[in-house]
Amino acid sequence: MTHNQETETAAMNMSSSQFVQDQLNASEPRSNEMKTRVIAKDVNVFYGAKQALFDVSVNVPDKAVIAFIGPSGCGKSTFLRCLNRMNDTIEGCRVEGEIRLDGQDVYDPKIDVVELRARVGMVFQKPNPFPKSIFENVAYGPKIHGLASNKTELEEIVVTSLKKAGLFEEVKDRLREPGTGLSGGQQQRLCIARAIAVSPEVILMDEPCSALDPIATAKIEELIDELRANFTIAIVTHSMQQAARVSQRTAFFHLGVLVEEGPTEQIFTAPSDKRTQDYVTGRFG
Amino acid sequence: MAGQHIVASFDEELGRIDRLIRDMGDLAQAMLTAATQSLLDNDVPLAQRVISDDVVMDARQRELDERAIALIAKRQPMAQDLRAVVGAIRMASDLERIGDLAKNISKRVSAVGSGTMQRKLSHSIDTMAQMVGKQLAGVIDNYVARNPNELVTLRADDENIDVQYTAVFRELLTYMMEDPRNITACTHLLFCAKNLERIGDHATNIAENAYYVMVGQQLPLHRPKLDETSISGGQA
Image (cartoon, each protein chain N blue to C red):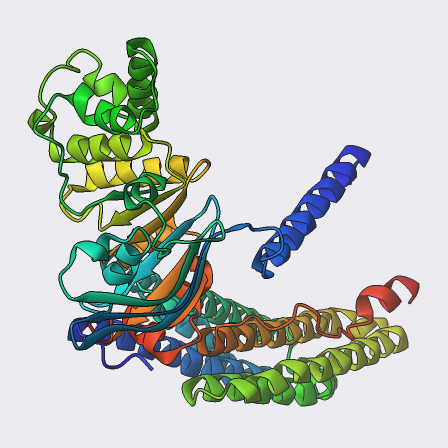
């Protein structure tokens, strides 16, 4: 073995042991360094007399993606909608427990719900652009929240948001055309652009790709990965592979109970609860 | 372990992969026993059979690889299913190597020769061969019976094989120093002993993989090694 080879091997050994070390560090609970953005504690939700969620407690880390998975009717969407009080709009829905965004009680009667929903944006299953131009779709939020003092500033926000949503290049020549004329995947990215135009802290996504084809889905997933640098994202998905691909943490709900929450790799390779194991391996639906 | 998927054909596919691993495990044991026997008895036809069995072993491994890859593509297995499939690919490659090593022992049978002296020498590795055989059988049996804790014990037992290998190494060295006419046969036997020692290592790998498949956690990296030939060999 020549001297050079030796040095190379030594360097390789070092970097590989460094890799192992990093992996070990990554698997340690990082609650100290990972800031928590949303804290939910003992959340119970009732639709009339029927209880939909039972004592759900979970911490949503800052600048990361958390995926909520579980069979239909398990309460994952209900929980997601608690985070920006979308359940307020449902007749007979009652939320108990505590949800804090940056320490502030989301269910404090003094809180301005409109302002809360600007801080906690939402993207839905079916793309739902306003029946207005592409430009107006994105400009609407900043306008009503008074985020732009003049036209130039507003245009800047629209362009930046469309760029962040990875849509600008595709629509820059037709900003005045109706948003509803775009393809499904483009419409969904338009809705994401609309959500991020008001600079939210948290973005909630309720099955954002279930109405999209695989290519549009891949684009959204790529976008989620990029948005993670600036936003906290909570996503409900029925696709286990999607949850495994886009999230850092995964929470599994079953029959209104949060069964298990942990690092995504662990949930999909070696879950600790039997119910999680059965669900992710396709043993019950 | 595979059972009760919503999609029944998923169970069938996992079951098929599991059966292939069991078949390969049985074949590996049979090849090891026959290879050792052919060496001890200088039985050339038996050695030939081991050599032809290796073709079957290779074919099984290829089949398993193809099935495992097709299953991953089709089903995107998760959790214990994912561990079972990835573990099967790894275990199959260890079993295939065991087949190669057994074949290599058989190939040396005629080179070792049939003189009484040679037969006496061959018996120096009899004990080691028995230990390796027991180790491999234990690993396969406990994979089939899903006993992860037994596998941890077996993994530690590989140490004894390493100790025995060192003893065989020294013994053969002594015969070679005694009479240089022994050198050819002893060198071949030394390779046979090394092959057996390697089979023990592959059995250990299988035990580690099987443990991960069942439990979902890797066994700690460090396992005491007592093969001193690599150190003392330089001084001898």
